[in-house]
Structure formats: C-alpha cells, structure tokens
Amino acid sequence: MNNILTIDGPSGVGKGTVARIMAQKLGWNLLDSGAIYRAFALAIDEREIDISDENALVEVANGLDLEFKIQPESQLVSVFLDGEEVSKTLRTQQTGELASRLATVKNIRLALLKRQREFAQPPGLVADGRDMGTVVFVQAPVKIFLTADAAERANRRLKQLQQQGSKGIISQILAEVKARDERDCSRKYSPLKPAKDAVTIDTTELSIDEVIFQVNKLVTNN
Ligand code: DC
Image 1 (cartoon, rainbow, N blue to C red):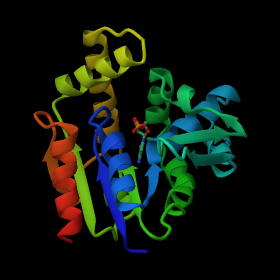
Image 2 (tube, rainbow, N blue to C red):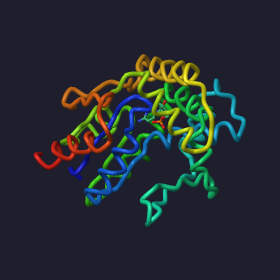
Image 3 (cartoon, rainbow, N blue to C red):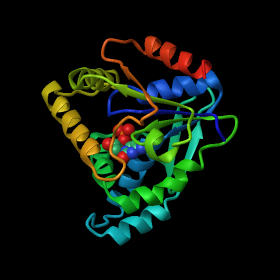
C-alpha cells in the first residue's frame, strides 16, 4: 500500500490536528502512533510492572489489547485498552512522560512496530509520530516533518489545557516540553529526526489552515 503520508515532529507541534484534518480531507485511515505508546505506558502503570524488567515490558507490549474506534461525527479517535475507554487518561502529562521513557527501549519499539504497520490499509494512511518517516513507513512517498519553537509549543499546550478547563504554569510546561524533546531526540533507537526525504515545515508563525494548505499541496503534487 503506497498511499501513505507521514507526519513526524516533537510534542506539541500540532501533528495530531494536522494528521486528523488531512486524513479527513483524503478519506484515508489515521494512525496516532503516540497513542499506542501512551496506551502501552498506561498498561504498564496499571499493572504496576517494574519498568526495569525488560522481559515483562516486552510481554505486555506483545499482548496489548488495544482498539481504536473512529467517532463518525467528529472523526475523533477513541482508544480502548482491555475493552475500557482510555482516550482521556492517555493524554495526561504523566502518561506522556512514561510513554517517552519506555519508548527509548529498542525491544519495546520492535514489539509495537507490527501493530503500527497494520494501519496501512486502503485507500490510504496518514501516520503521525516521531519515526513514521524514518522507520515505520520508510516507503511513504510524502513525508512531513513539523517543527516549532519550544516556547510556541508550550503556549499552544497551555491554551489547549485552558480550553479543557484545566490550568497550567507556562514555565513548567516549557520545561516539560524541553525535557521531552531532549529524550525523544537523543535516544539511540529511532530518535526524533526528519527523514532524508522529508519536507520540514516550521509552524511557529503559521496557523493550522496555512500548514494544511502546504501539506495538501505536497500530497496533491505527488
Ligand atoms: O506524540 P505523543 O506525545 O502522544 O507521544 C508520546 C510519547 O511516545 C513521545 O514522547 C515518544 C513516544 N513516541 C515514540 O517514541 N514514537 C512515536 N512514533 C510516537 C510516540
């Protein structure tokens, strides 16, 4: 299956929103690979698995009972772990943090690879994450790498929290964004970096509509 659009980039850059809108526009399937890492982290946390026990971690990764369901009206994806809806719990800072830690382990990444590749079904796939273009879907004909200043990403995260009725402290959010960047970029296996054939778009000064316009142009010109 060759109709694959990969969208990689750091946390808070807006990949999720861009990927969802593009999947809707193209009528393609959507893979939020971060949600797989987050659901795995949640499973580890709930089962109180010792995170230094690699064999136990890989066993959970291999047997993860995970299901994604698209809500027809909003096109938002609901995630079910062991039959229970976890879409909201997945998005917490704590789960993201643990996901980022566990994602540094090579055998965990390998265990979750097949599950991600299964999303490549006709008529096409929009895949968002950190290593979609470099590892998981190297054959994708269009690869996008989104970037934005850390301060701007922290601001976007704060706004998102406020829209959800939560509060946040900008200096703390910025520190978390930077710590996550550092870990995701410096890990040995599948570090966050643009694929050689990716087009990088700096979204610091761009609206979502402007980003979509550029991505859409790249897809339709392909
Ligand atoms: O995109 P996100 O914030 O939901 O991802 C959570 C963490 O999962 C991220 O900090 C690193 C890890 N991750 C990864 O290593 N590879 C991916 N393709 C997606 C996410």
